Image (cartoon, rainbow, N blue to C red):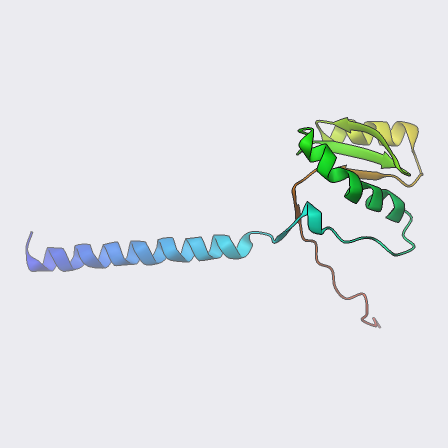
Length: 125
């Protein structure tokens, strides 16, 4: 290889490294922020499922310890109705037994994705 070939090779390597670095940065930006289950906030609102959410917060550590991460839990009041492997299974029972009632159907996760909303204080025309 002559000097010109080395120069072109070096340019290609630099370009690939820059592209790889850009892809890594883009992927990091796309990853959703998460929060550990021990930091889940208490629901102090008058939400119809606030009671179920707060019960889930107290039980999630035990559910994770029992190996239920990734499974779906159905909570009514302060009672765990059941735990299923798929969302569809949990939803089937929810619709069968609790149609039009307030229940919490939730995936059991150690690291919860942070869901951000906005615009609730905006006035729309």
